[in-house]
Image (tube, rainbow, N blue to C red; front, side, top):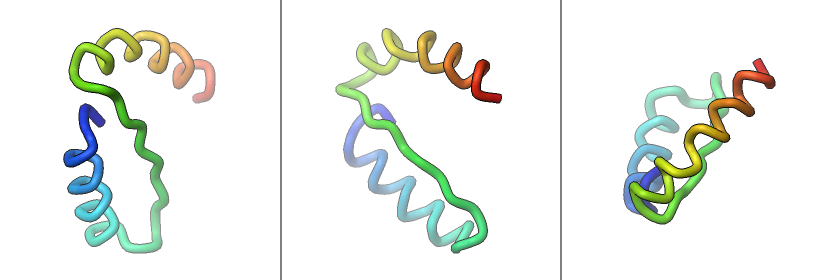
Length: 50
């Protein structure tokens, strides 16, 4: 997530929609620049994980 308020909103929304059927994790960043600078590394990690 780009910021705290986005994370809180989406967590609440996803929990209401998905219920207990699906779990998820969120990752917070300190703004858009931080998110964009760390995104390539995260995507490579997810590629290896999948």
